[in-house]
Amino acid sequence: MGSGFRSRPRGTLFPRAAMPWRGLHAWFLTGLLLALCGSPTNPFEVTVNGASSEVGYGGTVLLNCSTSCPEANATGGLETSLSKEWVGRGPGWLSVRLRNITEPLSDILCYFSCFGKREVVTFRVLAYEFPSPQLAISNPTTSRNQLVTINCSSAPSWPPGLKLQLHRNHRPLRSWAEGAVHLELVAREEDDGAEFTCEAQLSVGNRTLRRTSATTTLHVTYQPQMDDGSCPPSQNWTEGQDETLRCGARGNPPPLLECTKDGEPFPAGVLRPVTRAHAGTYRCQATNPLGTAVRSITVWVQYHDPDLVLLVLLPVVVVVALIAVRVGYGIYYRKKKIRQYRLQARQKQLEMKVLRSRQDRAPLNDVGAAP
Image 1: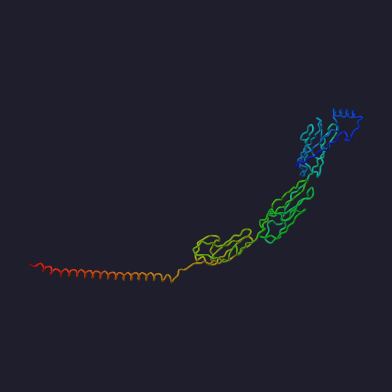
Image 2 (image 1 turned 90 degrees about the horizontal axis):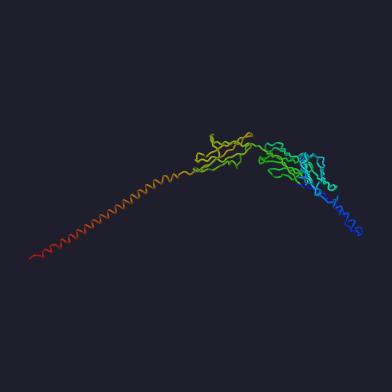
């Protein structure tokens, strides 16, 4: 943030009070002469600008100093106890670089002379010390239920008033506090992988500076664990469907899980078609360097046997049905033949009757025709 300072302009030569008419011409001639010769009390300003009025310990600041003096050869300079390097200068301006600023407070004087008068402006530089915060965890890799101490600290600052705050997973655990921050916790499974940082805050002039430590991750180790949720002790399967043995274990380091049935490997989490032979007891064992956990699982297989009575009766029913059809067809066929026989007999009787009738009429016809 740029900063600048200006000098106050001088007052005018003549007072504001009313002057008597007597001697007016003398005052007028005096003023005219001073105007022509250049009055040493003409108002002018001196301005100094810097990139910032606050700089880190050992830092550098570039200052530019100038004046509004109308004098063509107005000269100026800069006085300071700090190490300086001239960048450039000319009529009415100069530029200086201040190096290796280590004094807490430094007043830099920039001045210019105009028509014999000298104006001075003070530019104050604050060299602050803002040390980086430090985070320390007593045991970054610990076992479950062990006490862990976390410290957030920093070296003294200039100006004083540095504040610290401890963060977990990018969220503050406590409000800002001056001085070191301590936290004690009993390590739990859910603390594994938690990230901690220490943040520092320092007010310098109109600015608020912040710095953050490196991130430290907490690792919590624990032996294998299996429960009803991760490894149900009783599981129901259905014959003919695809099923998997449901069993999992948690732990840090991640455990190795092995499941067997009747001494033979039976990996969990693998789909396979179910038969009734899969029913039985399974043994699952999870192991890591900290210990072993064992769990038994009973698998029930649901299946349906064919109905034996139905298997026996079904052929009988089929045979009976076939016999019934055969008998029925036989009866129908016999009746059909009987009807056909009767029909044929009746037909012959009719034919014989017609033939007899014709034979009876033939002799009568022969008698009527004799001479």
